[in-house]
Structure formats: C-alpha cells, structure tokens
Amino acid sequence: MLAEKDKTIERAVSSAWQMTEEEIIRERMRNREEGEMMWRSMEEELAKKDALIQELTEKLKSAGQNP
Image (cartoon, rainbow, N blue to C red; front, side, top):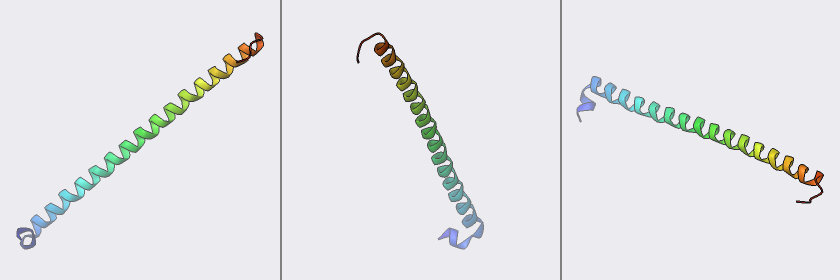
C-alpha cells in the first residue's frame, strides 16, 4: 500500500482522520449545548405557566369559585 511506503502520505492521512474526528466531537458538543438550552427554555416556560395557573386558581378561589 502507498501509505505504508510513504511516511508523508501516512501522516497526511492520519492528520485528515484526526481533523474529521475533532469535527465530529465539536458537532456533538454543539448539539449537546443546543439541547441543554432548549431544555432550560422549556423548563422556564413550564414554570411561567405553572405560576399563571396558580395565580388564576387563587383568583377563582377568592371569587368564590372552586376550580
């Protein structure tokens, strides 16, 4: 095989493979960060909705209606 005979080609192939692996790792890190941001956003939105439900429930109770 040519790569076995020529150390320069062998190093180039190794470098290209390593760069590809690093790109895969960076992509996985970006995906994880985006997922975590989406998760936090959903948690914040649910907390707001829970607070609104609690507020409206209290208003209904104070108006003499039971939910």
